[in-house]
Image (cartoon, rainbow, N blue to C red; front, side, top):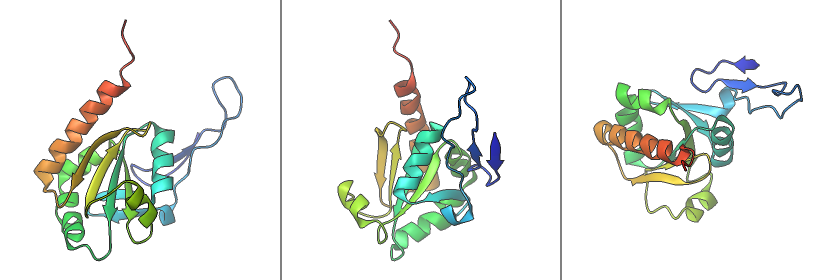
Length: 159
């Protein structure tokens, strides 16, 4: 396995499968594909972010933002710098979607305002949506609840 070091978003390439067969490589993220907001590193863009979440079988924490959004900047400077939030964020593939660059995605998901945070399982199931500025304690609680919902969804069915 070959890995590129980008902290929690290290990209790894699996070159040979378990049976010796070659498998499709995982997405390797370089510096142009990620951005830092507060203490959290985000994958840039909906399609890339969702692909990485599916490959890693991790839920996605999608931050819908816009350059003109005052409360988005406030969250980046306060909530996303909180150590508890930053630690919880490592359990997600964090994805940044700029509403001005990807308006069709925002329309398709029927966003009602910014900032919006959507937590999505690798299968595409919503694990929660938060609209408007979120303080660190509230966001940490929401992230923990989403992880618990994800754990229940991923449990194998018991007979």
